Image 1 (cartoon, helix red, strand yellow):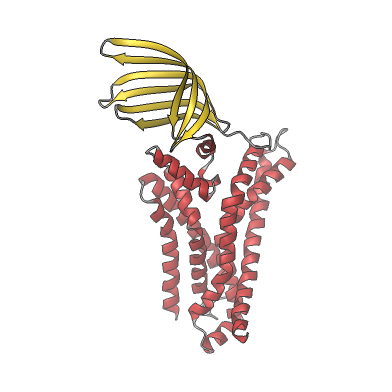
Image 2 (cartoon, rainbow, N blue to C red):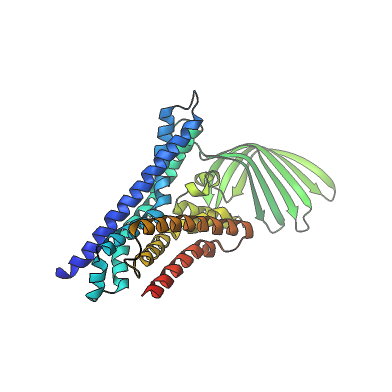
Length: 363
């Protein structure tokens, strides 16, 4: 039991400091965001609407400030121990630096879990509610719709290009056009349907029932026309997938982002923006832990030569730098098409490398 006294003491100090830092930064962002939102007030957008909008956006603010809050909390928690010479006593008693850092990282796992839970289960709903308030729409469940959807399917004869003017999550289609090309990219036919509804799933494809279908066939002997009341269209798109094509990448959960990737892959396409968002959310736990490692490097080494105030300033600057570096690598991935996984991992590698280097240098 005595063996747990020291770990519990360090964990408790780091946990309370991290909780205070995350809560403080979160509340400050909520206040500043509300004051900024007051500029958009109108007859249809009141003070209460602005408050509700900010409250629905608050989970997003929480996720954004967890890495910086964990960094700042680790600096404050370990810094207070260093200021009271408690870290010196721990090291003199034979406790290694990395063991103390390990104790300080344990509370960070709590915020890692909070971040993942909020990203997965809370953000998709709250961001949708905030968007509805901002656009002055009803706060009931919104019907997801997509306009101007294109799909290209490879066939034995060549290619089939499909254009859908409108689709929604209730399984309804607007005007739909199909163009048939042979292997030489020559137009061999075209069809147009006035409307359609979802019918059934067959394998990996989804069958949509089209109505009022006009068909044009281009052959060696000329052009022929025909008309059908009903015709079946096979698409790699289900009504449940419509919301994946309408919501912003930042508003989708990890499972939705993966489903979006599968949908794009099935169509032979890719969305770099969604891939970057997926890897940044998936790797966010490692971002938090790497920043705690950097925070530890600020404390160990010259324990008495730096005041707590200077350490806090350094932590805030480091948190901002890490945030800007994450945004920069994301933009590079979007602009160049370079591996979104590597570009999302790069800031974590840099921060962890800097933390390890400073720790080795100061020992």
